[in-house]
Length: 338
Image (cartoon, rainbow, N blue to C red; front, side):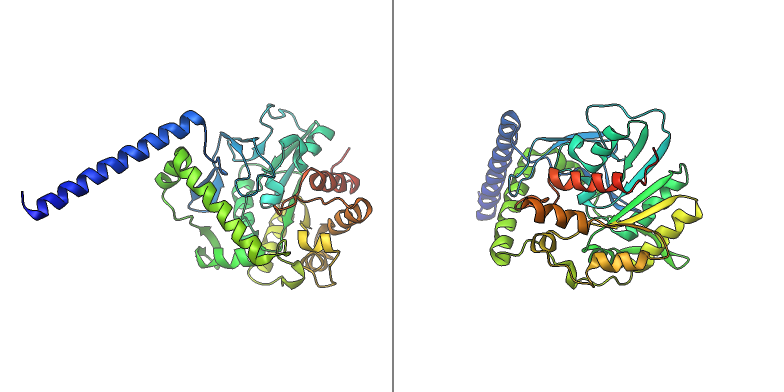
């Protein structure tokens, strides 16, 4: 056998052993039920990424282990819904929520989330949670346009966060335009890649370790920094334009719209909001245009009174206390009719 033939044979043998090893590892991990059930996103040609319709999974915090074994269910529209109950058939009022991972609320049990708490207090109101992680006003606007073609709610809540301007700038780079406005933001990644990652325990476990190492490095670099301070964020384009388009779309369809802003964990725990914080900029913008729901005050008041954080210790999202405060603030504002 020639030298080239021997090398090819060796490569073939090594490749076969690699495939065998990966196959054994995948089977072993499935038997042991080890892996990481990450949020079930799918690429979308208009909304960049969406929740997989009619899908259930168990969500865990692979990075910090602050929460785990959270059952999550998405309905046929991709809404986060109660995993244990059927949806309300008859509604005296329809209320829709738009936001990012804070309102999506995969970090707590559904009954402890904002929408879950409000459902228990208002059993004849149909709450639809359209929040999706990493969504910002451009994607909120595109989603709302889609939904209003077939259904109209009575009330819409839009929750913003201080990273929205940065995300909107990125989505604008990937956007397709029609008649001067964003018509679509293509998610790009082929569906088959998502399916492989979603169905492979081995790849999910590798992703879990990658996330753990990334978070540890970030924490080491940040030291005492929890997350961005919204005092340094400017409400600017394109977020400003698509916030206005979202609000106008609601008004033109006779839908009551309430805009709110999720306060930064850093600023709540340091009581460090200045007059030009992102929350205050949103509040000022809403003046004379739409209703604004203040969350900064109630969250700070709770923390100062109890010395208990409404956020997880390491993760930036709301814990049960945070969701309870937001839900109670909505109830006290009497936005949802009795």
